[in-house]
Image (cartoon, rainbow, N blue to C red; front, side, top):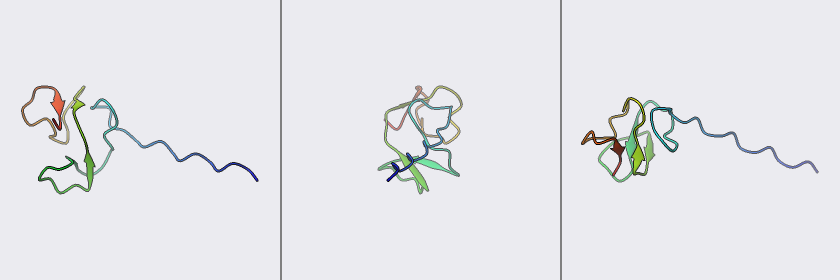
Length: 63
């Protein structure tokens, strides 16, 4: 029996360190956002904070 194919790697937004998914909206888990995608931090912002996750603009999101 052949081995099952590995799951495809998630598509990560290049504006963030780690893996923030590419979605219509991403919010910090446990916050007041309405998703549909959520991430847990802290997450370094290495480009544009397109999802507005770094509220205090210190370069670290979802802290």
